[in-house]
Image (cartoon, rainbow, N blue to C red; front, side):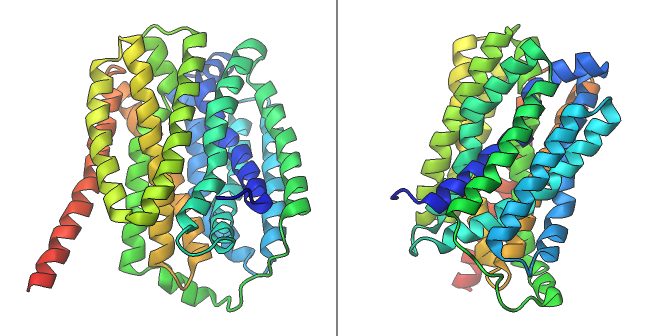
Length: 386
């Protein structure tokens, strides 16, 4: 795909949002020490953001339905900057949670509208690739940004990374203003009609799969830093290296997942879920072997992000009459899974489970959407034969 400035600007926005979402995962030990809370409580910083995205995604998308798409995206980027600035200045745990909820206002609508805009900017047959290009900012955030934020947080405290995020949040709207074309709001803004589309069984089913796959991913990702520190005895340097490896895997998986999804959404989903279940069993067994852990985390990151364009395109296809709302709600579904994954991991630890049990719990979660997809395919074949 040729370089597209508009896609690049959208990817910059996703990079900033990706850092906002994922950086606290690498900062959990620092946050826990400084705020004097246990690791599971610090994990609620991730959960508060995730649930905020889930709640606000449809509300903000509907409220901004009459705004030009480019203006809405710029406004959302400014809200992101304000929330990160408040997080950096938060005097305690409670206000930090509130700041995370504020930043969550922007993500669902930004990715939802941004994915729709990206798909409209390219020719048919390349739409999943365009969506993947937007989400590439997330993978770049994980390759370079999150490890850098983790190291910076260890060296200078967790507030400095949030200040940098606020600064990036101001660069993003400037880039969008410069290169994004004027995109008027779509005609026909009947809220009831859009909500009816959202409540259709195929749309709800696609959203449910997004929740389940995201829950499986974030059961591990939320606790990757303490999992490596306690399960492997890893140093801060090793954790930073591991996060870089995960990010590299995510970049490869996001790109290849977009290509595969343009060929077969269902096939990509089935193969990826099967591979994840097998890999997570291996990760649990090899958590004490540094080299094996790095290799498995690379593949794990790739498989997880191969699902991102796949799930986004499934929802957009199922809700063709209201793609903007459905796309935004799918981001909310992704973040509901993000929060639920943090809850699942915390439940494993609070029940007395060891860190190697976390990948096994994730594998069990991934088995649920795999079973659903396979069962649905079997029923479809039976209906055709009948």
